[in-house]
Length: 461
Image (cartoon, rainbow, N blue to C red; front, top):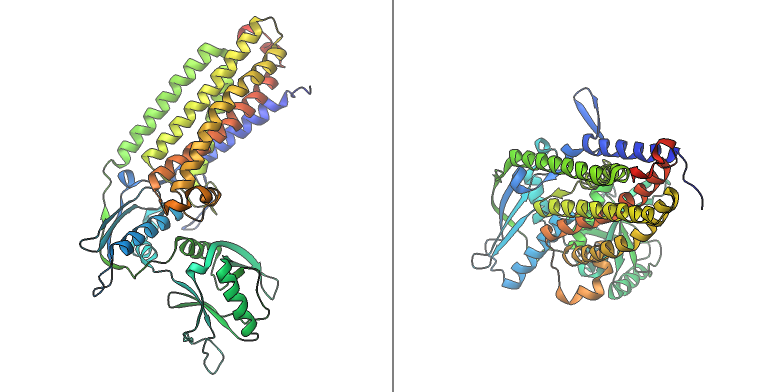
């Protein structure tokens, strides 16, 4: 069996310390008064309503429209899906069917000073009705006037999935687009339309806003379509999220909105952080005093696990959105760290048992990790299954896990719940990182450091 090099310990430890530091501090540069974020840190976390405050808005149907109860329920479900698709998992949505109103509360996003509540409310309340229409009128210069024929080729229900992507234009430039997959019925309708309109125009609309008006060059019968005209990949993702969430059954009117003061506040958040640091310090003392060198290695791996978990919440790289850290989400972090401690305790105990049977240090470490892995795997894989089920059942309809578990949950309809989704997300990430840090990184570091002379004493194990 190939032995682990002495340098591996320092390489793994260095990576842990660098990634953990960056996950908390981030990397920001300034050019005059302009700040650019390269790597997001703890300050970029989107905190829940109870810690940071947020927005309280009341939506209602148009003035002369009496919305049926089923349409009000559909509107509530779609708003929840849109919130979760924006990584806003700490929200409150209440529907009053007697007065035809929907009350929504959601937290500020990261960078509160730049937050525009009116824009966020507008995004939630857009009907988001996607249509493909036949033709588009142009002015004398050939530019679209925004007036089109009433012939509708495709509607939102003809689309099974939408995703942001890049595509090559006629000048071989990468442009952001929204890639659509059509239902069997939509595929047939689109194939018939593109065959009939060769050389003509099919205009693409979101509500009454013209997105693009491409000319039909070929018959498209593969069940896929592309929406162009996006300003950025973020705009393409926003549009894809709205299409996946579905169109609201009626236009929502904003009755009023106000800001929410935090009920716990940043002081309570800071108190929780101090409590977490104290708890980690106690775990550190116990692990080192009980397991000596394996305990020290366990502490390093736990530091890396916590750092990577915060990186997954902040978004780490600026291209990725941050995640709302809620109280259930914090519970998921704590629980996953507990699994990390458990994994290291099991391994250290197995190594101790192997040494008592008379094995060498190298043999005891190899056998200890091998014997511990089965117990760690059994305990963690069941938690992963539970977390995947939570993400699939309570996530957005177009997400990976919802698609994966669609054959199981399709008969129940949308059941998006941000708090449960937040708990499932942090739990899944934490348990996966337990395998990475508590098993793989710990094994590499311990096998590496055990090759140094001063660390060959069995007492250290």
